[in-house]
Image 1 (cartoon, helix red, strand yellow):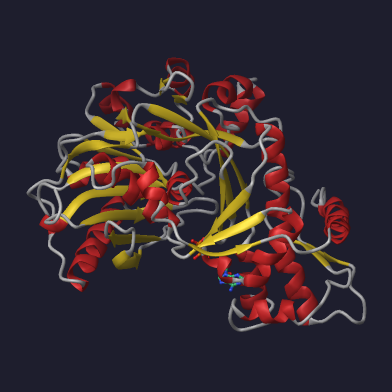
Image 2 (image 1 turned 90 degrees about the vertical axis):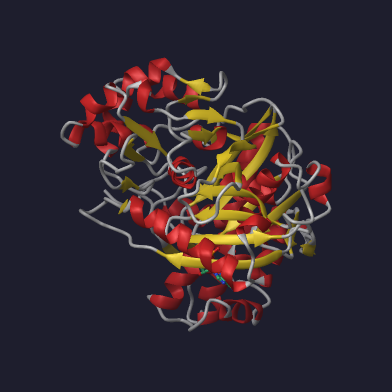
Length: 499
Ligand code: ADP
């Protein structure tokens, strides 16, 4: 296949932007392009995307990334896709026309439907089959809403005229000119319709949500040739060969391919995922159980937990409280102090997620004295990111029964050396920051490249991951315990606030 086909193209379709990333066989990023697209908020709590714009922004950045380095379609060995998860679309199989906008994972319009299911005692059955805690985030109630609310949609769905897809499915459909209707196991496992043990669409769940099986895509592995780009799309005959949801792709991009390996993405929120191997682990701490990927016939499971406010705490201090002008300034402010001097911040602005799950908690500073400065408040916000991630890891280790040796880190906030060092100090684990923090796009590229023999196996990939810096715990254990003790105390006082 080489030397003509020198590159892999990864499509990274996120919640607010579409990215295209071209890598070479050393896993280096040769070219990339990114474009924001429109967020629609039709009513409070509702978020939609225009499917046509998802596609047009995605194909535009592909063209841009290729043109920037004068790369031709015939030089691309394979295309991999990673995507915002759970966001749901339904379209007409014949015309390709969506029957409604994409309903985004953040959309809360179906929360009452989920509450009804919980009240009817369905939570246990849903969790057991899907590994998920029933919530409006997942696709099932969004599909149900479209079928119920769009005139004629249900009848057309039952007659086999409509197709459902998460964003990966939509992109493969568009790339192949409507030839291929598939998803991968990682995306399927976020629909709340997929039985993660049997690895098939679950008949009981389809009945529960009243969703006709005729609309569902075929579920494939995360690394195989699903089809080829069609003559109508920009570049014909390129194999589309890898799919994984964004967090799963990041786990793969970090090469967390062995049981017990874990990564945390430090972005707006923080997302931790741990590879738990060939068996799903049931969480006692309200973490989610999910499929990480299926590769060469083997399914790998993962535990997942997220912190709602991570880097967003720094954003908030910058934009709303105006403590500093650039996120990067937070590092020097925090490092200007030898200690937090007893000041703690609980960033529960949107309640608390895993493992605390308190929707009524609200943000608060504790331990403020007349000596408290901007530096203290900034440091408290950075520390809070590290404490929250530590709580997640503790829950994950408890659930899985395996200890994390090293946390692999990516995302925008990993640029902050104070945060990374403090994380290692309180977590008592090494934190490993790679040179290339584009883990999500890399994961999609790796999955696609493996499918077409561009890379031989995961061992060959492991050599492509280069560490930028390993942060080792340096703080005395006693000191770390002191910090964590006061963090827990602050946490308890921020809980159960709204009435
Ligand atoms: P997302 O993909 O969620 O938009 P990114 O991975 O781009 O997020 O990271 C952006 C987040 O990281 C923002 O919330 C920002 O406040 C935070 N951030 C960026 N640089 C720094 C820094 N040097 N120190 C602390 N936080 C940072």
